[in-house]
Length: 239
Image (cartoon, rainbow, N blue to C red):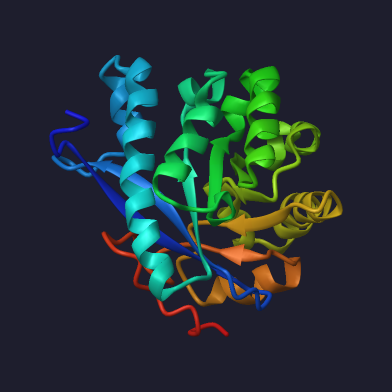
């Protein structure tokens, strides 16, 4: 199903609240038939082992698109998710280096995204992957970062440039106490470690003022743009 049109690749912009001119997009992979998240579907179908093959297919496809995008938008950076199989594979970073070389792309155009639950369950392998990704010259992003899971201790080991908060943390913005006791300390702790923060699932303009006050670096969500088949966002909108 992977190579027969069973999945489609979408791009969602990640926009700076701090005047950074980099044009980040996150890659999302959905099942064509029902728009389900690809890795969720693989796990439900008992095909989690196939996630490495899916990740490699996604990288090959998005690197082609990235090469074309960079001709018109040289500030583009892609966040590409990898599943737990890629995280555990000691050869994955080497494969990625070859894929970048084959696409004639600099690793600086790429951000490899791993989830914090996968990192927490495989810390040794995650550290190895992080070291290899950094040695390539690519960046690292850890996603699904939630204050309840004491994530900063794990992040310190990986030294990611970016960390994306868990979407559930967006709910904390509706309540000043939650914002001050849950969200703000987490963002400040990440920034202390030189890790830039991304808040996903931003659905309204009303969230922006709070995120600005909290100090969040980047935002993502349908308020800006839902995931699209192409990288076509006007990053000057919030400038």
